[in-house]
Image (tube, rainbow, N blue to C red):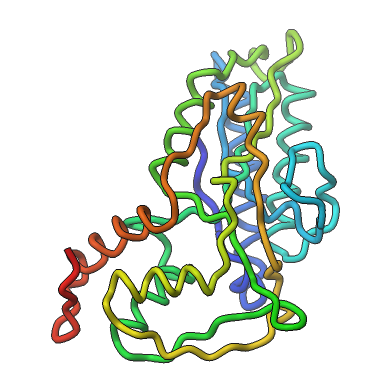
Length: 263
C-alpha cells in the first residue's frame, strides 16, 4: 500500500521539484524494487481526483479523459498512472490506483481548507473563501478518512497476485483504477457554515475570485465501479465527519484561551 507523496495543488507552484522527486522518481524507485522482488507484491497506490483536471463532465468517471491537468501535482499523479501501466505491462506487476477525492478528518493535512479554516476561526483570524465565475460556488466531494480506509482495504482484499518473477512477466497482470469519493459535492461556503456551527464561533470571511494556481472549481466522484468491485460504500456526511474532526482538533491542540464548548 503506497500512500507516500508530495501532496497539495498550491505548493507545487513554490516547490515543483519536490513533486517530481516524490511522485515520479520516488514511485519509480518503489516499482523498481517491486519488479525485482520474488515473489512480486501486488501494489495499491494513491492517485488523486486532481487527474481529472479541466474535465467538465460530472460526475467524474474512471473512463473520462484525464489529459488536461490543471496543476503540476495533478500532472505528476497522471504520470504515475501511466508509469504504473508500463510496469504492469512489461513486468507483470499487479497494480491498483485509487483516485482519492478531498480526504479529510482527524490527523489530516494542515494545508487543507477545512483544517486551517478551523485553526483561523478559533483564533479570530480572517479566512479566504474562493468563488468561481459570477460568484458561483466552489465545491468539493469531501470524503471522510474512515470511508477512504475501507476503500483501501477493499482494494487490498481484491488485489490479484503479480505474474512476474525476477523482473520478467509470465502472464497478464491485474491493472485497476478506482474513484474513492463521497459522491456528494458540498460548496466551500457550506463547509464554513458547518464549522461555525460546530465551533460556536462566527467566521470572519473574505470572498475572492478563484486564482489560477491549479485549483479547480469542483470535484464530483462517480463511485459505481468501486461499489461493484470493492463493495465501497461511503457512509459519512460532511457534518458528521467535521464533528469528529473538530472534536479531535480541540482535544489535540487544546487551543488555550480559545477553548470551545464543543461536545
